[in-house]
Image 1 (cartoon, rainbow, N blue to C red):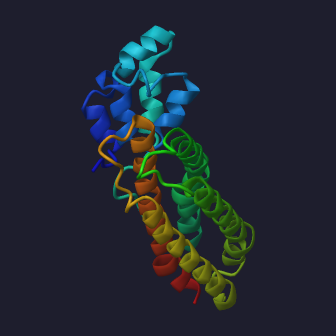
Image 2: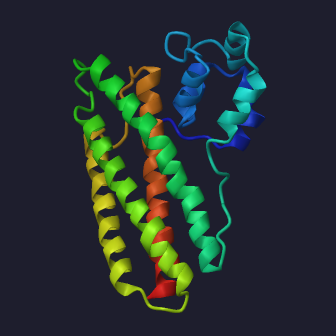
Length: 227
């Protein structure tokens, strides 16, 4: 099974000299960077980042910096003050979900279209991801526009009703993750998966980890401060 790699690990392994296809498979979000720079990670996946960037006349090190910024380093610090914790949640989770979900939907669309005859194609995945994206966007908007400002205005006031509603929506997100795993054979791509398919599942594994940590941080660290 492919596993996500941290920026530190990637940089230490001389990312610039690794094949585009390998980076696309192992680093969630890399495909969006490659598309932005018109680097072919599919048919041209065997070319190293250095060679592909040179052929395109672009700065390979600048692309490396974008790739390294895709993931937060492990053990991100958790502020103790509610206002700082809220901002950390927005930066670490809300902004990341908004950035990464559109690319996952695009990849799912492509995999379902190109591999529609494959016995393990995750049929219905793109539609499911669009539903997850919409639910998450609405949920995060309610937190940022209603709940989080209430917390900022009244740091000592119990906020049980709105928090309970957010907890209920978290249960819905958890159920959506279970359905996601069922659609994707527990996020295990087939042995003959192309770079796009492998990249999609690497991104989905990161989404699962991020969303679970997101829910944990709010349910078990932030919300109890106001209950």
